[in-house]
Image (cartoon, rainbow, N blue to C red; front, side, top):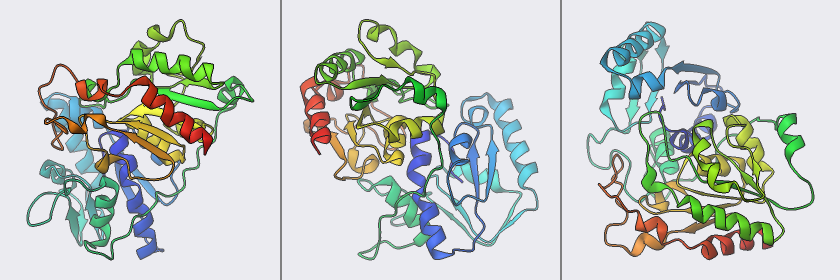
Length: 330
């Protein structure tokens, strides 16, 4: 079971690779939210998707939440699983599986020593630990399984040829339960970066969900290819595969770009990059706010009551531009 934010679900995907290696003939069902169902439907290695109304469960009123739980109980009633993996630290998620029969249940609930998500570790590696139980020098990093997501023809036709494609994702940092503006780099910085990238000979793509429509207005005077709201999750992964670089802050698009194998410039402030962006040659992490005494302020559940994210504002446009040009040079 893994619901909730897009980035969290993407980080949990290496669990599938670890499971398939340990038990190649196993049958794997994933209890997910309707938000990420289209993406998981493209992931190899999942035999069955059990999708529930995550918006109702996480953001609805008490009656709506109770209705989602009741429907989940009916769907799972009497079903038998040899192992259930609850990739959540919140004990309340355990209530969703009350009607199924499980031979073994493993969870990330902080119930004892070295349980829960260990601070400072990559969340992707911690989800794998839930599968393998290995917590010493024998632990391995697993890649996510392949994603079969073709680029739709209408998007293909909108992509200019010749110049390197650089995608910007100024929105995001929002899920069905909450909006986290502290994680966002100021949108005017993205606009200035777009101008510099155009001057450097790049084609700039503006990407995001339909809920990111607010980012369009600041880009009104820039020569960008506006794809905000024109992609679903699978097609955004396919689009990022075509990009020479993706620039964004800690958000769903950052993790989708990683899933696509795209070079990334990852902008961090209130969240620690060690947990959300594994160091690799194709990722440039910018975190100048690490020097602040309040950084990181995210405790795994909530952010500080901050009204001025100077940690993100400390990232200069020139810093992001150098990161992109370095990736293009490679």
